[in-house]
Image 1 (tube, rainbow, N blue to C red):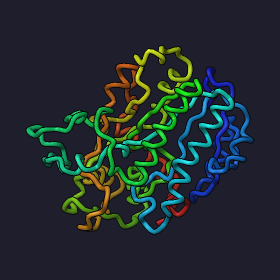
Image 2: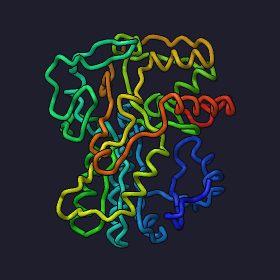
Image 3: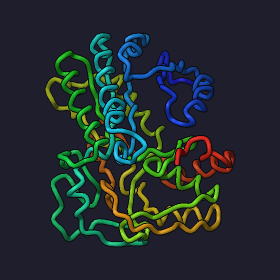
Length: 341
């Protein structure tokens, strides 16, 4: 895979703290990417980074259970997700670099989402169309106009705070900022975990005959998420980095949802059915536990990104799942490298 002609050089930064992260280094370097072992929580590490035209902030502890699951502290969560972003914004200020934050669907207020009336259609939740939806929500998904008021989880709060800080820094110090609120990303080589990366985790667990659970919502696995392949971000990022837009007039929104939408969404029960067709049976256990921050249906509406940037997901859901499954068959013990469970 060659580096795109509009990119002269790419540097990646990782503190290698997540289990399995070291496996990424060689493949990235083979693509011509310079990998820096550093920690964005350390201002001195960030100050030593080479000069860049653009910074993509994709760093986070990406789980709504972070800080409350007994595995990470709330302070660690804030340091990773918020203070690291502050250091990167200071870097952009000093170098007049553009800043792109890969944010999350979990910035959206939980209370309204948890109280939807749901129907079950083909073993999947779908919102009852005959209800009064909150502003910014429809059967097509959650749009940018929906509330980000707490509660959104500690994770969601650190990300929406990062969004606000990024927009303030960009406005105050005169560098471009784009906020992309991403749905679940999924693809081959992902380090799946039950708290995030659920599509990869489910498929690898099926392939390796590991135990699985439906948690909450009646224990039937009807909860739904959408997903997008990371490569479908590339055309959008190229436009954001290279096209001149009239940002000062406010005519171009800086915050957009980037997701698979209804077309690329699936319930856990349907994902189980897909996996059974590929790998045979592995019946999930049932756990009726009700966990904080769980919601039955999280599908983002990317209509704004389509109107502004021409964004649309190009990789079908079945193609994403097949790619993960092919990788799982080539890496039969993948979870032992990366799933700290």
